Image (cartoon, rainbow, N blue to C red; front, side):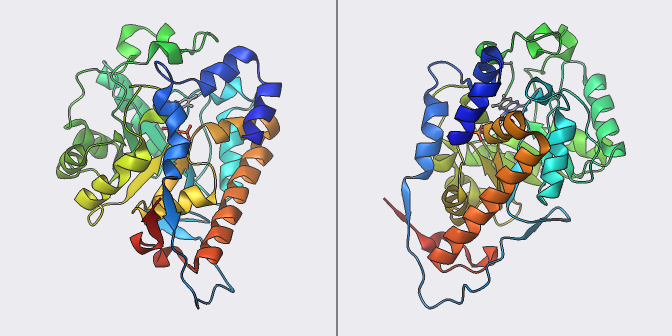
Amino acid sequence: MDLEERARAVLPPAVFEYYRGGAGAGISRDEATAAWRDWRFLPRLFQDVSRVSTEISLFGTTLAAPVLAGPTALHTLAHPEGEVATARGVAAAGSVLVHSARAGVPVESDRWWFQAYVLRDRSLTEAQVRDAADRGARAVVLTADAPYVHRSAIPEAGAAAPGNRPPEWRQDPALGVDAIAWLAGISGLPVLVKGVLRPADALAAVAAGAAGVIVSNHGGRQLDRAVSSAHALRPVVEAVGARIPVLVDGGIRDGADVLTALALGARAVLLGRPVLWALATDGAQGVRDLLDACRESLADTMAQAGLATVADINASVLVAR
Ligand SMILES: Cc1cc2nc3c(=O)[nH]c(=O)nc-3n(C[C@H](O)[C@H](O)[C@H](O)COP(=O)(O)O)c2cc1C
């Protein structure tokens, strides 16, 4: 929250409001963080936590912590170098950047995944995805929860604004589950589906070839009053978690939130707005500091809970509040 206030002080008000915004009355956005705090920890005693490791491996990449930078549009509104600076900070922290299809500039990094929308003209999507694969993206994230860009989420700032794009560049509102295999075919990469809240949709995604799912309500920016990801996570994990990694985002702000998500069965989490606040206040270094702080906060919380490695985390460390 301190970071958000610092970003508010340096960003043009219209950009700050675009980043912070939620759909409708902002109910889903406002509930997201509180929802993680509906659980309490049951710490384990007599565990050797003299060394705590937060490291994980995901689709062949080792991460310093199970925390990624999620896809958010238009980083150039926050910093002149845009996504290039974000990617540098992310790599320095040993994390992965999920690069938005609506990014301000392309990234050069070996620690990134590409987030795709399937556009009304699929040849445009195909060109973007092939280009991302050529430039070293390690996975494709298909965002499936945005048939239309929510009107209130459109920034005024410039021609890059999604609402200012010609119709063929808009998301295909008739998107079907076949898009998963299509994206896997053209990219040769694992495809994760983002925006899953229902176990049945997770099962359908896996049946259609998804390599992972991301439980998300898009930061409350699409369907207001969509369920919090903190509450949608466990049923999705129960449906598909034994077969594919389940990731989650929405309102995750500190190590205790991350530990809660992992105990509910998430393999990793993504941060949305905090990365934008960090980029706006301190560029690449700010992004690195944010991810480092999140890793340290997770390590501290794990130690206090008696958990020396990520593999030690399971549902037994949680109890309902
Ligand atoms: C300014 C902004 C732009 C976003 N743009 C995208 C996008 O281009 N693609 C996408 O899949 N999700 C997008 N999202 C949603 C994020 O990936 C993520 O689901 C959400 O922000 C997580 O919640 P948090 O901001 O509370 O951490 C955006 C979110 C914000 C705040």
